[in-house]
Length: 310
Ligand code: SF4
Ligand code: SF4
Ligand code: SF4
Ligand code: FES
View (cartoon, rainbow, N blue to C red):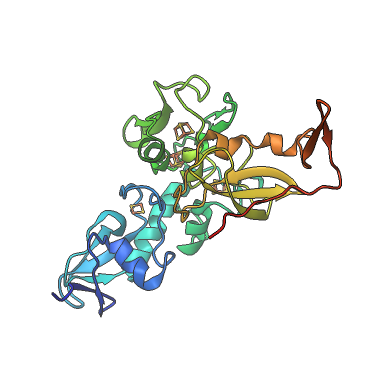
């Protein structure tokens, strides 16, 4: 049976089962062709930000309607126009409105140069914010109560990625969106601090957050520690893939790569945060040999790795 097709800029492409307009476009033109903010590789589509909007028509160059591509199934024989003037204006205006309620202290921000809001703002061509200063949420206080997790909701863009990460990825249901319209805001458990919430410190919300609104004490999203090494967690048999950021031979932070088959962008509290012992001065780095009830370090001896046969 022949596959259905749809058109992107009037060229035909085959639709795969379950395609949204965004996955359909990404397969042809790569992940960065259409900007997104509330979409994330390991979360279900949600449709909160509308930055991914594209024009869709039922006939070639016909009357178009703007739809959010991330959560709209691609319709057979539809005509998709990802970069019309109308769409470029719409995306720019959406991001401009988000920036009217954002601190814009990028140079001193922990996630500077690794911030999806920054990247999208640059991509849609923001050079100024045309709207006058109005009501905002810039006075929200930081939450530094927790042993690992931190938040600064003055930088929240209400994308709900953290809520979905906590629900869909960790299954902990700690975070929710409370209030409506301009008052919509993220709360932890029954509106308390990270410390008093039911958070289990998995860090999924921080990794999902596209800005610095949720982070952790190790500043895992900072690019200050540029040396990144891909490795496998040694704690349990799941074998989570980890990306370890180091500086001067010391582990600074750990993230979970999205494309890893074993853990798909997630790992537990131990895999992500329990790494301080790696840098401990008493950590064993050479084998010990037992001689008359005493364990002696063998400085000249290298640790042995036994590789499985076949
Ligand atoms: S979260 Fe991003 S846009 Fe906001 S201040 Fe930090 S770097 Fe800038
Ligand atoms: S760290 Fe994990 S458990 Fe805690 S709020 Fe974030 S996603 Fe939920
Ligand atoms: S805290 Fe981060 S992930 Fe959560 S809604 Fe705000 S910006 Fe989005
Ligand atoms: S990325 Fe599609 S609505 Fe946000």
